[in-house]
Image (tube, helix red, strand yellow):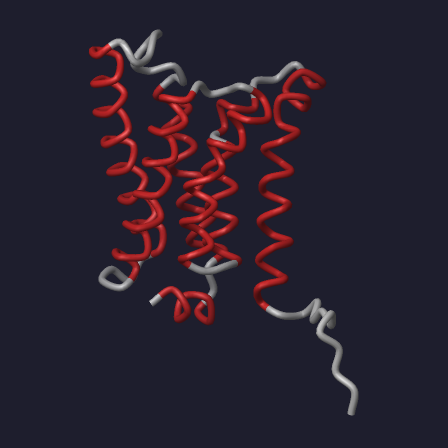
Length: 175
């Protein structure tokens, strides 16, 4: 029996997670170009949160936290947007979203409600932080840059996606 150090199991979970991570990062990487190509501001549909929900559905807690931490920073490095202070706030919001989701899913047997609550709390913390950063001069601009009605629609859409996409087998892995 010959075993190579360089053998690579394409069906292993870590490899699958890597492909999912690369797809999410690639999507964020090309988002500015797609926005320009289609003349549509894709940032309005919260692509980082959509990538994060895809990650929650298809990987695990650790990987989801890693994506939440790094996605805004990768976007900053690739497209210079958002700026550093806002990247920190978005990373914190996404990490809080993941942590709350995994915490609440163990206590509440309703994926829609768990996702909705975790997003609302994470957004509340984000806006509190953003208000502080604006007051301290770390950020410039408006407190709310994406219209609230779009944010409400996206919260509902992401929660519906969670409800429809997290199957019982996956749900057991979340707990």
